[in-house]
Image (cartoon, rainbow, N blue to C red; front, side, top):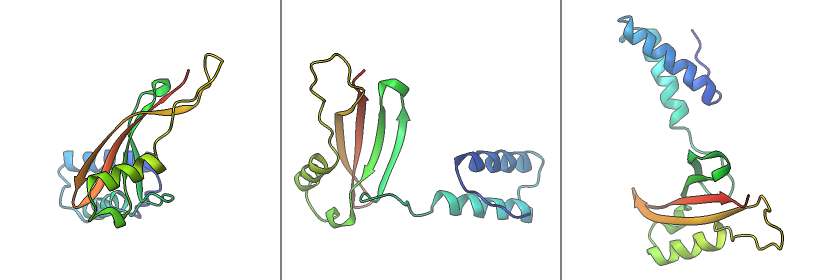
Length: 131
């Protein structure tokens, strides 16, 4: 059996199969071990994003916006919170659109929370839409 995981849908399918194997008592079979290795490799792959090393939506509220998790580049690992917040505000913060019309449909930032995880600066960033 060759395990290929290309996207989240494939991941869901292989997780379902893994649960099925474990339910049927095949938890230590070579198929299960290969499947677990492929899942682990997909989940732990390095992110392939733009200038930010890591950005993932952690809560999607549809038209009400979303909350994303943003990791700052490694050059901020040894810096203080003020430097990290300044960089985030300059690079990631989206100002609310000003318009004489009622709705523009543009995204804007509501709030952001900074914290350190494993020596790196991270932000939870809430984004809403002007609708």
